[in-house]
Length: 184
Image (cartoon, rainbow, N blue to C red; front, side, top):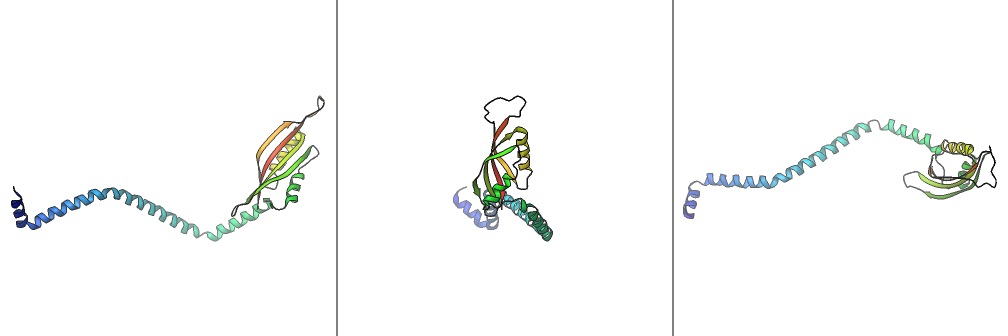
């Protein structure tokens, strides 16, 4: 078949040839577009997840007053356990109040204070104490169960130097603590 015969057939059957050409174009378009179908499914999943989260937020928002009351009560319950980072003397006195007859705080100082914008501050204290093992255990337990929220970030313990050996007498120990205390 030569080109003139092909053109003659196209002219004699224009509708059929146009439909064949349209089918070829649609098949090509569908082939190249098939990759974006997966993208559209991914977008649909994202939109559905956002919709589910919005619905959950609306449902939870119905209980907003009760939740706000619970949060306010929690703040009132935890607020007394937070220190005021700028009150140096009361903060240090808090630790000295745990001294008992067997434990002596040798050195106490505030190392740093990091204040968060929307979060509680963290004040770090370095504390050196000495005493017998049993009294030191009581001292550490009293710190842990005290009214302020704190954690030990460093804990070093060593046998205190002694000039002579005494049999049956509790040996003194020296403790160095780095404490992080939660503040307002």
